Amino acid sequence: MKLGLVGLGKMGLNMAKRLIRHGHAVVGTAREAASRRELGSAGGEQALDLRELVGKLDAPRVVWVMVPAGGATEQVLADLAGLLSPGDVVVDGGNSNYKDSIRHGETLAASGIGFLDAGTSGGVWGLENGYCLMVGGSPADFAKVEPAIRSLAPENGWLHTGPVGSGHFAKMIHNGIEYGMMQAYGEGFEILEKSRFDYDLGKLAHLWNHGSVVRSWLLELAASAFAKDAHLTGIRGYVQDSGEGRWTVQEAIDLDVPAPVLTLSLQARFVSRQEESFSAKVAAALRNEFGGHAVKKAE
Image 1 (cartoon, rainbow, N blue to C red):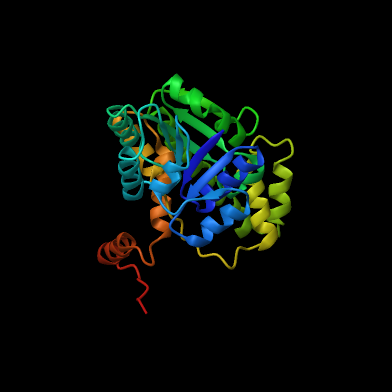
Image 2: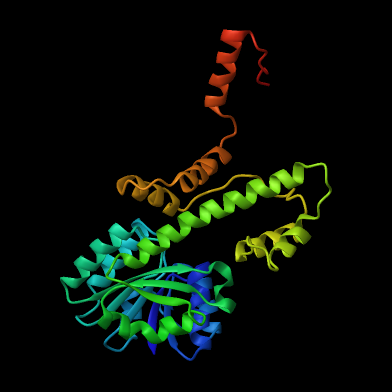
């Protein structure tokens, strides 16, 4: 099939390349000329802007959007709404909030334009391994895009999750779980690293991926990271978040679901970004006030 792809960053460009490898025709656009040229080198067709991209597609058009969630996605979808026709379909493969996706689906439906929200997991490895896709939308709209979805995903790596919003909701929870898993691995390996035993953490991570109950792809990546730098000396322990962990915790609160592990893993990321903790200063000051305990002076 032929489709448009908006956004040729780390994810979008690799997705375009995978589609081309599987015989699809891709028209792509991005702000960076270098990204457009790389798409052209991979066999794709370049477009300078959304209008040119839409003009190069045949009805019913499919446009897959891979730009940052929030303002960038809002702008692209608003622009596409004025360029597309009834029967066309837009896919948002970014990390949008599922509530925004429901709203986007309703707005586009008013113009007769279909909308799919595609939760996408796979990162930079997706080009070779495929992308796990959680896709919400109507069965009719899903059918129009299914050939591309099948090509992007590995075997058994895609699911039509239900109506619009369900795809990004599933991806949100997926990422919340990911936070908890990463935190558990991080804490476990820190205890190992600080112990009296001189473990080869890379070899231990590799071992645990063979028959162990904690085996996972994240553990494979840990083994790879330790193989490059056994003590991770070149990395600062500053952990950012893309938003989905926060949304997961908020959803748990709204639904009265206890989620202590996911909540604490999000809080641990906040702690990682602090040069100095004011709350820890307060605790140190209080110990000094009530018990005369010594405090360490700031430099």
